[in-house]
Amino acid sequence: MRINIRETGRHLYALSCLGGLLFMTACKQGEFDYDATGVLEADEIVISAQANGEIMAFDLEEGDAVEANVTVGYIDTIQLYLEKCLLLQGQKATNSQRHDINKQAAATRAALEHARAEAKRLARLQKEDAATQQQIDDIRSQIKQLKAQLDAQVAAMERNITGIDAQSSAQDIQIAKIEDFIHKSLIRSPIDGIVLQKYAEAGELTAQGRPLMKVAKLETMTLKAYVSADQMSRIKIGGAATVYAYSNEEYRAYEGKVTAVADRAEFTPKTIQTQDERTNLVYAVKIRVPNTDGLLKAGMYADVAFADDAD
Image (cartoon, rainbow, N blue to C red; front, side, top):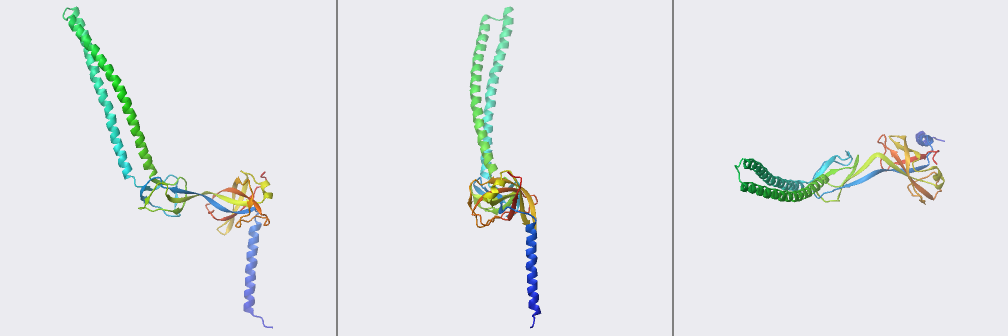
């Protein structure tokens, strides 16, 4: 009987590789006991345009990190700026009317003070027989007329100032409205995250409500897993859970917290596994996981073990 040494060596090599793979898998799975397997999800938001016009700048790419409330682009604001300038000039003209009214009243007050001083002077002269009663009566009549004129001017001035204040306040509101439009022309992300998709480029026309980019918040992830009815007694909202994910050729453990538990059962999804393969009905559970090392990615599979002390 002839033995093919080459073929025998190949078979032995293949068997040794298979045995090593099974041994590594058994070791990795033996490191922990898990209750269910799920898929990691990231909090994603779609940022849309809040203004109409041409995108003047939008300098970022998919995969770039963005900081919350930091401007990454803007939509044309020239017309808004010019409208704001026009409103400011109109408000300046409105406020100038207030000064004109004050000047008119000031002139009448000065005339009234002069007439009262003249009346005192004539009263002294009358005691010395240097002024007539007619002169005294005339100055008193003049004082009375000036006082009535001042009262009328003050009343009119108060009405006019009230109207001017109302007009100026309306202009303030219009200016604030324009400033809000200008602020909304700035492209910003409300959260720290990574740009997953970019839907527009600089130079394109956009409209209010049109998507500009999708950003994912990667500081924390959500693991959505499915458990059987028997496991539900050990799971509660706020309970602790350990999530195991395979990254950089090793399993890593992350301490998470149960944030949602379904109140209704559903059929086992085809892409989700549980410990009991015969389970037909399962409950969805969500676990919040801090992405402390930044290695967790959306779409990764992960295992979860629920704390034994959970009620």
